[in-house]
Length: 116
Length: 114
Image (cartoon, rainbow over all chains, first blue to last red; front, side, top):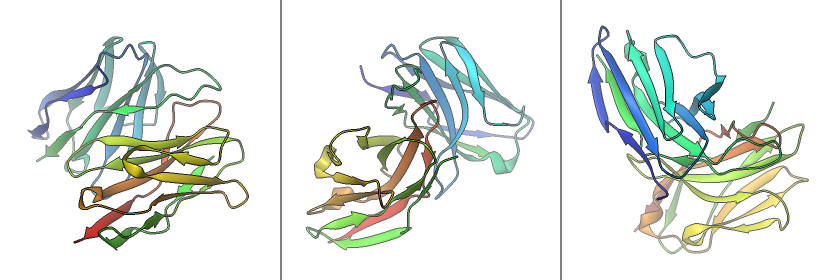
């Protein structure tokens, strides 16, 4: 299984809602990532988890809250979002973080989020 | 810090013609280089990567890229494109230490003209 799955595919939410995005991989990868991609822009890294611990937070606002319950699952909890947070949210995974070892990141299809 | 420049935001090409998508990078340390493709409404798929060794790298779907250290370039080429190659192409760089962070270029939209 070389797939990263993301649910839901599409999500529309109001600014007062609380919702969650889910990402799952069964490749035994120990590093997982959240990216945000605005229309016609490249992906921007938000968070990195390594061995279920948060290792990078790219100064993301607290209305985005990541969670890694186990090595296969990555969640992104959303609360009080703004319309400018509307974007494609991509999850990725890679084997593990080791200095000097490059590991390909496998991307999921993304969740397209619209904040009204 | 590293950066990536993709000089062309859009490249229209006739079907079965060759194509080159340009990518230049900047880094004070050794880097790894990647090309990703994104089809409409999909995630990113790795086309090819340069880690070390031979400067000519072959990838999937008939694409190849050449690493040129003196020109800090990693241009993507395909000798004959197909309609199905219509997509957004991203060049990305990762530093040798701390491989978790990919820095992407702004992307090149490849449009194949029948």
